[in-house]
Length: 398
Image: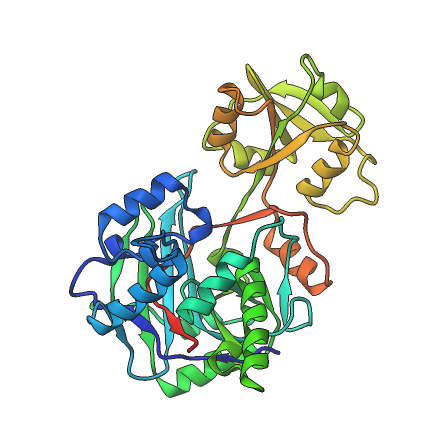
């Protein structure tokens, strides 16, 4: 099982500015417009390091390394004095108005190769260049953002405690409240380490970061002639694998490349009964879950899709697998991924997509069973919400 250890983090001096102005979403969910807003918000926002741009003849990787070094020298970033765990909670209201939260612990997990048994991926990843993150590791020699892991260790959440009155708490642009606190009691540290190390860790988010960390570790082993030192581990946010602590949203499907006048409902008919119209609103996902239906979104409206009895024998019990099977016979279609019911509706109505298919979220039980069985879900099956912020803590691997 993977060793899980505390580390001495590198954190912002919170007396200089609010972490609301200094932290950022993970690099891979930031578009150019949001990157510009974050960069303009504060000269020390984490996006300047985690998603840098070329400047004054220096490439982006050199810029990131230089800024990280300079901010530490200037006291913008401060090294913690001793290895600790970091409790981290995200609290928010979901689209249906329910109060939700995710509580976990940030530490360092010993790296293995994906699927070796102690760290388990839960879904296939789409092709993505890993060279960018690998070069960032080479230049900065630091974990800038967390892998997100899940553990079946019962009772982990109770070990983490709660933030104190003096611990930093801030709210991001999406209304999510973030709280970070230090866990430095030796008995609690031992209990957390033992709990996490007793079970395999399932990767919820950050598969590419994990794979890149393994590649960098192997480089360091070769270069150093043995152990890669601190690069033998990577920074990870571990959350107990229970429904109360996790909000899993679906990633819906957008379709393009269909001929003019193509009868998509007819093409799906062997698999789904496309039935009565449905209004799309904040309760749509609840309705889909309660009714056991998917939704076909086309220009002018949306209709329920009821899986036909026996049509999916031999297909995994996942909406994404059902959609893959049904679309296999639709020649020439192009598939894109989009989270958010309203976002899918806008894309279809605006003509940015020919049609959309809304799917239900994968259950916590399905995620756990898939990873435990050594299998993977189709790409873009799960969207864990909200996303841990980059910049609350960094970890040196120098």
